[in-house]
Structures are given as C-alpha cells and as structure tokens.
Image (cartoon, rainbow, N blue to C red):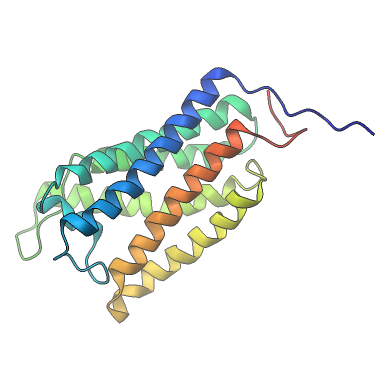
Amino acid sequence: MATAAPALIPSRSRILATVALTTAVLDMVVLVAFHLLQPAVDPITSATSEYVSGTAGVLSQVATCAVGIGALALAAALRTVSRTGFAGRVLLGVFGAAKFVQAFFPIDAPGTETTTAGLVHNLTGNIAFFVLPIAALLLLGTLRRRAPVVLTWLLLATTVAVLGADAVGAFGLAQRAYLVTAALWVIAAAAAVVRPRAGSDQR
C-alpha cells in the first residue's frame, strides 16, 4: 500500500523555522562562550543573567533578544503550517515577547540596589520561565515527532528542578539545564515544522 507523501511546506514557514533554529543554536553557543570568557561566574550557583556585567556581557543581551525573536518566529511558523495548537502558539508568542523585552532590561548586579530595569528583567524572566513549558505541553498534539515530545517532558522536569535547586545551592546548574533543554526543544520543534510527518495536519 502506498504511503502518503509529506506535505509541502510554504517557503515562509521554512524561513521562520530556520530563524528559530538559528537563534536557539546561537543561544547555546553564547552560553558555552561565557563559561570560557567569565570563568569567575560559578555555573553551579550563579544565574546566567549575571554574565551581562562581565566580559563581553552584551552577548547576553544579544542572545536573549535572539531567543525572543526565534520563539516569535517559531510561533508564526506553526501558525502557517498547522491549524492546531492555538493556545500553545499564543503562549509561545508570550514567551518570545517576554524574552525580547528582557534583553533590554539587564539584571541588577549582586549587592546593588533594586532598579526598575532589574524589576522588569525579573518579571519578564519569570513570565518566560513559566509559560514556555506550558506552551510546549499544549503543542504536543501539533509537534508529534519523538524529539519534541521527549524534550517537552525534559523541559517540564528541568522547570521543577529550577524551582527546588536554590534550596540546595544549585540554581545556576538547574537554570543552565533548563535553558539548554529549551533551546533543544526549539530546534526540535523547528525541525518538525520543516519536515512534518506524512499525513499531519498541514495547510
């Protein structure tokens, strides 16, 4: 019996998915680079936002902005190719918008007074942190390939880990695990847009 051919993907969707994939890779490259550029920042206990105050700190803002743009691009790509997952796409867009705004409001340096920029940074960061795993969960029906599904559950696991890690002095480690998992989820989701399963709900 003949199998269904994969659906043709609009060029716009491919471009948007490629943007999302590229920004996720950039985010991971910058994270690795900071471990080399700022070895004094403890990756076990320190938040990645602290990199903005050190050597090449502007890369932290560039990467955060890129993550926001990539998430917005992925949400748009999913809208282009599938009619399912509306709530997930909306939350993915909220995540992208929060990260984009966060990039322009650096965290307050440890031991300094709280500033408006620091408050905005923390607010947008918390919004992004909580909505992404929910968005991923709601998009399970749209992204039916194994990689996005597995990474969704890993993302939920690392979210829980971050919430409890501060109590054992491992917030930085848990946060980095969350960020890497989030980037890998975006890559897997973008790949699923470019190469959907045969017979999936595509337009």
